[in-house]
Amino acid sequence: MKLLENKSALITGATRGIGYATALRFAQEGCNVAFTFLKRNDLVEKVCKEIESYGVRALGLASDATDFQSAEQVVKAVIEKMGKIDILVNNAGKVKDGLMLRMSEEQWDSVITGNLKSTFNYIHAVAPHMLRAKAGSIISLSSSVALLGNVGQSNYATAKAGLIGLTRSLAKEFGSRNVRVNVVAPGLIETDMTDFMSQDYKQQIIDRICLNRVGKPDDVAKVILFLASDLASYITGVTIPVTGGLS
Image 1 (cartoon, helix red, strand yellow):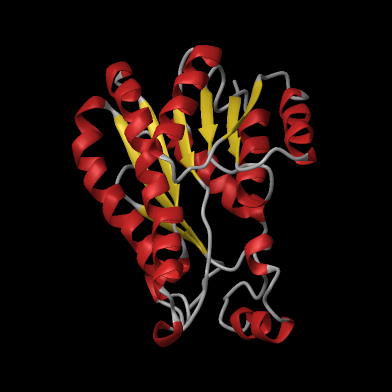
Image 2 (image 1 turned 30 degrees about the vertical axis):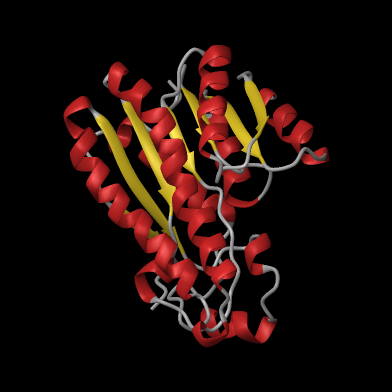
């Protein structure tokens, strides 16, 4: 039997990178997958077709994760189309790096909203359904930056660290209803967010990674799959670093 047979998941931001890799992993394991995107593009139909090639249902929905009402509408639409949401993966996020002394208020607010409030929005929308069902798995994407800090990313580190605090609190709130809440904290992963880095800078980070390589989106997706499945039925409130041993 497949790990996510007959389950339905909602993944925010899944047309590329870690969200995309997670959507395909879920589909391979028998899960119907709904996903959000900010603006419709050619990738949306491509992702839907790839998900459906595994014999499961796919649903792509336009949504600004920072919009509270939009999150509520997306969750309502997914439940109407798929009947339920067993798994929520909060993957949508953004970066606007800058040193603190040069950081604008807009840079700070945008990153806090884009990473932390967006996660609140979707958990707030999904939680009532999971709590009524007395089952569910919520997984949020934090970052190694939340654990280690990084020059020029105080806004991003703060937002991603906030997800860890949110997760620990909700694990206690939701545990009695069998709803698990966990965090995955990726390190240096090959995604659009790391494309802007110079090769020299990437090498400096690689030199601090025990496995001596940049991670792949699927390295993270496999851990998300584990947390979403019943293999992790007694795991909640934890943060799992997926960093290759970054120090």
